[in-house]
Every structure is written in structure tokens, then in C-alpha cells.
Image (tube, rainbow, N blue to C red; front, side, top):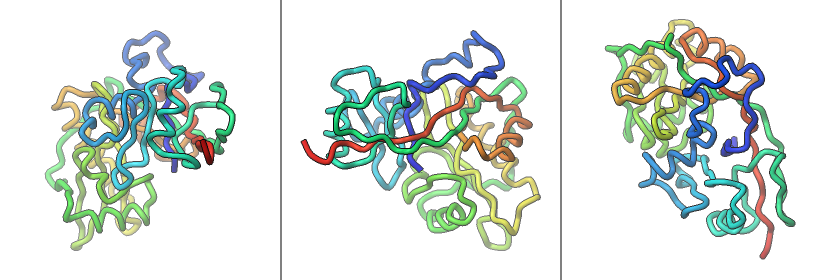
Length: 251
């Protein structure tokens, strides 16, 4: 999956509270960029106009603004010719030689006052030694991109059953004032026990302890997960077009 920066994405038509200062936080319009110049600047590759995470950390990349005339050269400098980069929405015209990939629809959800995190006594912090199990669980549950060093982005936790990693969840993007919940996955043998919910609320608890708010992204077609998150206290902020562009094959 290629993750697009969202500075040009359209607001969801059913935005529940127009004018709400939390919903309107501009950081959420380009969360990857905010993270790459902020909490994750130590991991970032690139410069003032375009940045990305290392290939074994995350597929996320972003630009400061697609309106800057120098951004196209900055992307080529970062990824080279004939390479993919998370792209702008169709409202942004591409220069000659650039190609647009096929987008797919996602949603951005943010917390409301109904979301109350709580620590879970069974949750264990996952790290480098747990990466093989984490990659295996993600490959089977397919919650979204997870790479060998993704755990470096934040706090990842899991619950074990019968010596196996039964469920996991963690923190991915950290735009200013926010933390994205990600990699929520449960082994099919242990589904229906509420493990994912428990881990999400544990992650939320620690996000709140840092003074940040929780947010997340999901595929628009994953209606079951969206309903779960809404039941916990998240609300739809906007619909997001995830897509990509391919840089020209030569200069």
C-alpha cells in the first residue's frame, strides 16, 4: 500500500462538527509531513520540501506542499527517476513525464471525548526481539504495512496466548499533538475475545499520558473496523484518497 500525503484531500461530506478546532487542526491535513519534521525527524530522509522514512521503517513519505514549485525536483532528488512517491490528489496537475497511480479510498478518524483509554495488565511492550512474530502476525491478519523497523516509530504492545503473539497494536505517525494507532491485528485463533479492543485502549491510555490525542487511518471499505473504532469513541474527520505518482523515467 502506498500512503499519500493529505494536504489536498477533501473533507468528508459528513464532517460532524464544522468549525470545530480539533477537527480543523491543519496538522491532520498532512500528518506524515508533521511527523517527519517533528517527532520522527531523526528517522527522516530528505530535505525541506520532501521527506520519507527509511525503506525498512515505513512506506510513508510526504511533501511540505504540492503548491511549492520546487517540490517536484525535491521528490526526484529524494527517490530518483522512475520511482513511486505518495502523490497528491487529482486536483493537483502533474508536470510533464509524471504519471499518476490508481488511488483508493480511506478514512481518517480522530478521538472524541467519548474515547477513554485504560492500561491493560496483560499487554507487553514489543521490540526488536519480537519482530519475526510481529511480521508473521501482520502477514496473516493484514492490518496494513508493517516492516522490520516499524516498531521504532512508537510503542507497540501485544498479548500472548499459548506462547504465541495473539494480538498486537501500536503507534505509527506522530504528527504534532497527535499519535496514530496502527498495526491492530489479531491471530484468527484468538478472535472474538476483545484482544484488539483492549490493546487499542492500552495504546490510547499511553498516548493520553503524553498529552497527545489519538487518531488513525483505515480503508474506507473496512466497515467492520470503522464501526469498532467509532464504538470506542473515534469519529470520522475526513475521507482520504491514498494514491501515488511515478517520477519521470529520465531527466
